[in-house]
Image (cartoon, rainbow, N blue to C red; front, side, top):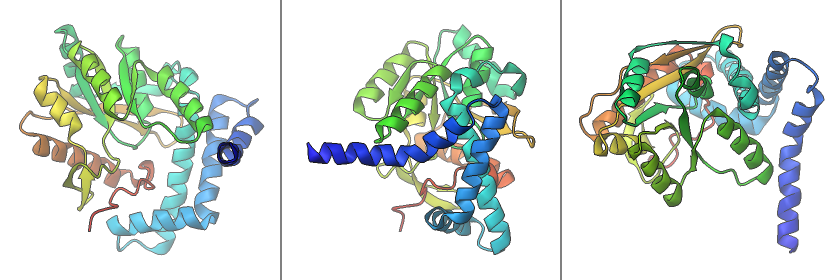
Length: 292
């Protein structure tokens, strides 16, 4: 009982700063609240040593010649972006209705519609880059709906808010793990669309280059695409300079070959996006942990 009580107190304490930041500005407009949380995260990246050290370790790996001042600016810009992204996910029901913020392009959108017209499912692959929920918002704008895979959070307060936000973006959603995977397979076999973020470390995966360095990567999306003959479509919601609009780009489906080649093609696609807009990727994922 004591252990459970201490865990509850710890969860409350961890969630309280974010709850305070969200509550203090709840009377402001959506965009101002989003920008406010972004500013808070930027301040954290500047003044909170654990966050700054963790970011520097990852950024130095990819940009070894970047000047310290430029790297510090990149970390703060990332914080600004990720704060806004988190706010938008927490308020995804409202975010999804703001159609004026989204523009869509790329051959992958037509491929997605063709698959659906033929009664086939589809796999959208993306990463913690830009605003990935903008991708599902555009899919919904076009009369379709994409489910999603999510990793349950250990903190029940974060879990409640994040889960509600993801559900608002499109159903069904599937937790990582065996049970979620079985339900996901039934969904895509039945003609459903699923969105998967493939840039988290997956120690049971294989070493595939990402941003120039090997990283353990899941082959699950390519395995599903090949097994059930589904299009695997990279898509990205790129935040505009003003922070309030999104350009959603659906790339051409990755050609069916084998799981490693297809997954490497996605890693190369996401890497190119990150190198163009490094501040829009979440550098705190410990992406290369476990690789000697």
